[in-house]
Image (spheres, rainbow, N blue to C red):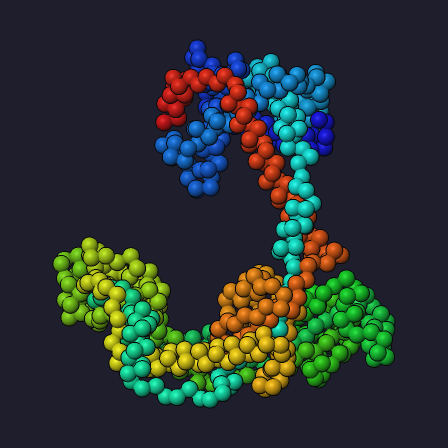
Length: 616
């Protein structure tokens, strides 16, 4: 019983007990009734129930970001869950008594001494702290010590139920073999270039027949016909004035962006003195080391010594030496603000200069775009007022600069106003009961919309999709011709020829995938290819279509995971642990249910109602 597992479970319970002390006193209940339930005569105290319920509500409220009401707690089933746990614990306490499990006074004393809430400033047990904490919790010493004794005995019983529960090796080996085994597959990939003859051009009757046979592929989804009024900044950008003085001021404010001196991408490695720096430089020139090794030997990374792009002014006394170097050069030792250093030049950035004429065009566009966005926003409130006064979208287009438009919208449409993510979200939620209101777009535009009607799914006219029908017909004919060719290869293999000989005879190439995994993917194969391969027997052949090609595959070998493969070993450990934990939980749940059903449980509904009333 006194295993490491039982001790671990005991200390977990102890930690929960300590955390529980933090919630003591949160809710106080008085009166002659002191229990909400009894299990074999053992009470489930009112304070225990109310405190646990309050803690659960607080924790869930923190996750929700707001205080939880009792009505919400009831909707989540918290009261029932808390009562069930407390009753189950008491049932285990009764079972521990029946089995004669108990905790001696010495063990109880040691546990109390280790509870931090009962320790004084010097870290040792404090009688005053002990008394104060229990008073805060509304517990007597006798009640607390009885609860602690019961919880410790209960933890021993729980640990005894779940300990030494481990799935047999056969179980984990079977799962690991299933998950980690691989397949070797030989494949012939055939595309349009491997056709024996070109696909003939289709006739219109053939295309119309194909269209009718696959009408679902040419049926438009349900659409919402939406009328909208839109004003975007782009519509106003050419009409808003931009002051030349503002352009000049922006240019001067951003002169560093338009006028940049020559710069270098530089790394710097400083040393304690010049002799050490020179010694390092000599080693580099002699080929005995390199810059990266010197950095690593100092316990640094290249990020630690990277200065980024720097100008002459950034380098001080080292400027001339560094700027005379070319990309890839290591120079020094030269003085730096950290002492003698070696510098490595990783790149040369030439000086840039954008004249005012060119820069002013860029700045004008930016300022005009900003002004257009402000102009659009200035029209949002007047437009909203018009709608509130009963104006229609058509009226809005007449009385403002907003433009009227209509779109047959469906999820995935990305043309015109439907290209805005904001519009898609609003169109998805739009219903015929919604009244038009001014909404914002992510580029600063405004719009309002109205649902005119919902268009049911309907076939697109053949004339509108004729080109797509022709492409699909050609793809289908190609797949059929290549599949027929693949079947001819299979027939020859089944007649006694090898796949390799048939491929050579037909001018095809066989490629080998030596390690196909169950959950992986083979480049160029369709979805589900790997799963199909893992259903095959050695030597079997299969044909699949995808990505404009037909693939003929043969399963060459089934390879189990190697015993010394570290990945298989790790997977086996994970599978064993997860399965054992699941088994332990199922055994414990079954045991707990049986124990509870065997005990005399009495619930005091009046006491529960009184507690719940005070929570409201």
